[in-house]
Every structure is written in structure tokens, then in C-alpha cells.
Amino acid sequence: MALEDVGERWTLHIVYALLGGPKRYADLRIFLAGAGSNVLSDRLRQLADAQIVSRRTGDRPGSETTYHLTERGRALAPVVEALVRWGMAPLTLTGPTSGAAPDREVFDQSWTIPDPALVVDETYQWTVDGVEFELAVSGSSVTRTRGPAHAPVVTLTTTSAVFDSLLAGQGTLADTIAAGDFELTGPPEAIARMFTATGFPAHLLARSSPAVGSRVEGARSPENEPFPAG
Image 1: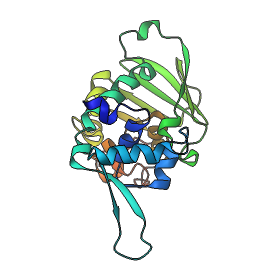
Image 2 (image 1 turned 90 degrees about the horizontal axis):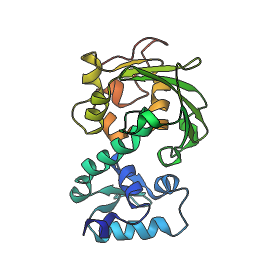
Image 3 (image 1 turned 180 degrees about the horizontal axis):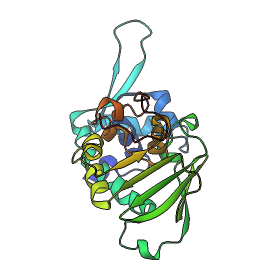
Image 4 (image 1 turned 135 degrees about the vertical axis):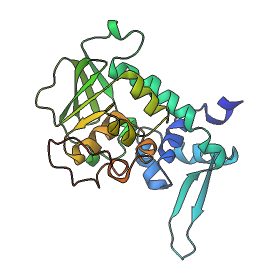
């Protein structure tokens, strides 16, 4: 029965986008840039019929209409988070077959970059479970290459267990940073771009402290200093 409501292509993209908060139709069109012209309206209609999505228009004349998840829709958060964890494993080399993964692999991240202006071509270094790799952003693609990164603007160090707990919504990024289980180094603006490009769910970041949750507003961190926990 669940697949009858959310099994159509692009449907979970809409749910994923709305987990970050209400969106205008135009905002959702950007998230579904690869879909046909009638797909978004069809999917929104289906989600509304299933009581997963609702819409709201302001009281003033000319107010914009926004779409948001209902209580039933918000209950899909653990499902989407589980899919994100599953999808992140190849990128972070933490999946059961990661030992056989190629040294260099390109990922199409257009599904998580609603606006190309939110990212720039740059590199990051991640170390997960002691394994170093470079993530290089080029347009809407991210290339993962084993080994140290060349001139990374952000470095991230953690374990797969911590990563999985974050993506499962068990704790906040601020808490893991404060506990020393998650280390971020780099300008807040670059950290924001990194999380956007790699598909870290915005609604999970929003559960963190304002400095982390806003991803950009914590700009009081000096460049190349560890990102503050709060």
C-alpha cells in the first residue's frame, strides 16, 4: 500500500525537499528539474490525495502558496533518512562492498542541488573510519577519489557509526562536534556548500545549534578554524 502513495518516480524527491520546510511551487520545480512539465503537478495532486502534502496560502491578497508535509507526510522522515544513509554509503566508502569500489567514482548530485549558485567547484577532504578520500565538486557532479585531497577548503573527520547515527536523526551535528566525534575545519560558507553538494539532509542540520543549523549564519568562525559546536 505504501508504494501506491510514494512509489512513483519523483515522489520521494518532493517529500525529501519538503522535509526542510515549506516550499513554493517554483522551488519544487527546481528540485525536479529533470522531470517533465506535468510531473510536479501530478505528483503534488497524488500526495495531497494521500494526505501526505498540503498547501497553504497567506491571508493577504496576492500571497504565495506554499506546500508542506502533513503529519502523515512527516512520518516519512525515518524512511527518507534510511534511504539517504543507504545512498551515502558508496560516496563515503562505508558500504559492504566498498572494498571493491573504484578508486575514482563520479556521482550525479543534481537531485540535492536545487540551485547551482549554492555550490562552487572546489574540493573537500573526508576521513571516515580512517580512510581518506577527496570529494571534488564540478557543477552538479561530485567525484570521489581515494587518498588525500588537493587543497581542500573543508576537512571532515568522523566514523561511519557517527555518520549513520546522524543520518538516522539520532542526535545532532552540534552534539557530535562537541563530543569530539565529528570534526569540521573550514569556513562556514564552504561547509554549507559541502553539505548541499553531498546531500546531507537540511532538516537534520536544522536540529543542530543555530551556528550549525543555519549552515551559513555561523560566519563568525575564522577561516580554517574548526567549526563551532554552538
